[in-house]
Length: 392
Ligand SMILES: Nc1nc2c(c(=O)[nH]1)N[C@H]1C(S)=C(S)[C@@H](COP(=O)(O)OP(=O)(O)OC[C@H]3O[C@@H](n4cnc5c(N)ncnc54)[C@H](O)[C@@H]3O)O[C@H]1N2
Ligand code: MOO
Image (cartoon, rainbow, N blue to C red; front, side, top):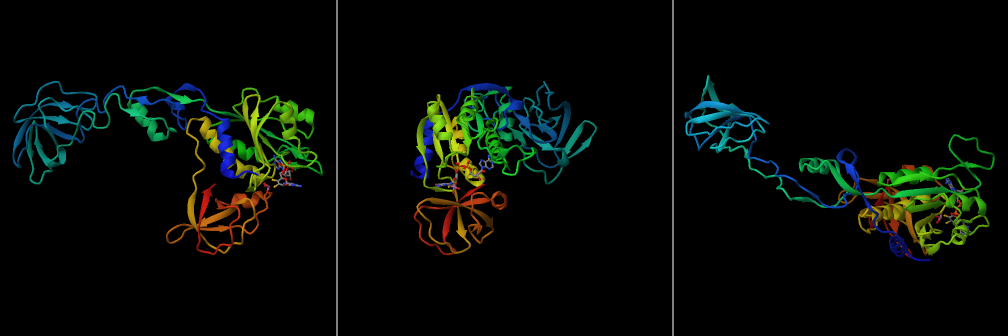
């Protein structure tokens, strides 16, 4: 059995960033920018007023008066020149007229017809946003996952579309004679296929397109058929049939179809029978069938692989630190990802693992907000010990 780190390194070796496509800004949220977005113009493209008031020249003193010679609004510049003793009525966002060096806010003047007089206590301004103060033409937004405010920047750069990494297509195959789809009438020996729904949602939240293929019964012929339906997938994910039982056929069938195996079995709990490889050129991840095992492996392997396909680099999931809220016994030869809950602490958050850690318990998983990570071969640890966790 290899370690989790070694398994993840081998998973990363199976994937590389996908090609790109161009999408309109309205469809770019959450997509991964593949090339820098380069500003086509300065922002603001002219010195602009930051306030509603009067644009004038110099540094007036209280009691100084100015004659209004025109108006400048956002989208409507005043085309003339402002000279000494003159002012232009101006509104926020309007270009500063030539000759003006400052904007006096309207609260600081008394106005009578076309004359304004500066009051005592006026602020010193200048309330002018210099040309290009936000960014200059040629400025770059570097590749990243596009958040809403990134889209505002790209739009301001006057770019109606962006080049993003293609969404990875993830084909998900549940396997097992015992499975029926939610809403179907299960036989007395059957259960509802649940794992694929979580994994598809996780993959989609990460930016992939998930395709749920038909459930494959535990026969070589049916597994072969469903594995052959993965055309166009960038990643094949199977669920179940990975262990050592007589009906655990996924590895055998995939290998008969030419799968090159990267590894099988890892020193991890839950998730021991994880397998990975390449099937007909497509990376494949064989997840264990137990619901918690498949979902925990989804967090630890599937999501980092999707991020790597998206061009976001090869990074393990980001762990954080917490203070253990109770004593815990030693771990065995596998690192243990314990379902746990966080609560506020004085410094670090406190973390409490659930008493029941059976990898079949979906209800516990829905109560959990974190996986407490215990290294393989760890001795007993006392409440108060600092530990790593993965938010889920
Ligand atoms: N003799 C041994 N038996 C088992 C070992 C072992 O080392 N020696 N490992 C155990 C561990 S650990 C795990 S994890 C499981 C994984 O086995 P498989 O990947 O072959 O999964 P299945 O046997 O197909 O299913 C396990 C369990 O999960 C249920 N299941 C499967 N798919 C789904 C699904 N899509 N939705 C909901 N539930 C699913 C299935 O009905 C079984 O109850 O093997 C242990 N055995
Ligand atoms: O490794 Mo299994 O995943 O404990 O349930």
